[in-house]
Image (cartoon, rainbow, N blue to C red):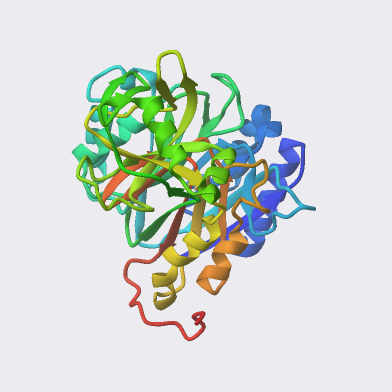
Length: 402
């Protein structure tokens, strides 16, 4: 199993594609044809994505190609001075099979959402080791699609992200083999000799008490523990230490408990993060970017800038494992920059692992990843997938960081 990555700051899409192809050929060798290429591009290349597909598939006809637009990109070369406009990762996956697929708008009209497409995929490829999904946030009910996936194929991990950077429907571009799409979801299913270790890391921590949602309408929380939701929140904030009250100035999030309503010991990592988008003082309501069910346990969250420390802790088990051959990383967090300050860089991940690995990703509008065997749509998290052969005998590495 081999991976190669490339990055370019070119603004011309044709030149960018040629630069990426040249670098991938250099790393893989001119006679090597990758099984899969993923590429990510900023908005400057929205109209030129077709040229990228033509370049890649004109060179590697049998290669599956998957791509999306992203607000900003992650790569080992990314820095203050070099901000890539396009990145790519090519994978040579001996012993693995790949099935590309797409879900269109009509697949979302049925209930449960997308069930026929999932069933058809798993008939064509039983027991995939990993699904990689890229979706348009404006047209795709990704959370519902993942719920259906969990029902049809429990235990099959999915990683990926929602395209980002556009402000209106039709502004994002998804690429799959020879075609470009501005809606729906594209992906690949990979079976065979592949193991994916997925880490979900949050830069948020819970504050205050655990609440039970006792009344909700749409995306508005009306009651928590039987009291008006905003009143309950204000009482909770008043009881917090000054340090935690200061953190609220960076923004308030809500954590939806993954394990359901029984949650007196719910702590960091036990929640799906949902942005609080509005406070209605007249109605005493709290508006969310997403839906929460009545009876659900929730806990409010604050950004404490510990994303790197949290990720490093979660990666500790990797120190006793074999080297990852490559990786994908997707994330969304406060601030405008990715590789500095409060963001996340591939350098952070490599420092935690103790070695370098080919890795790309982008800052997304939502992150897809499994928690405790079920796939979820996350927000304001970092989702990291480390990929290696399934048949490798894992032994402690001599170069592991102590």
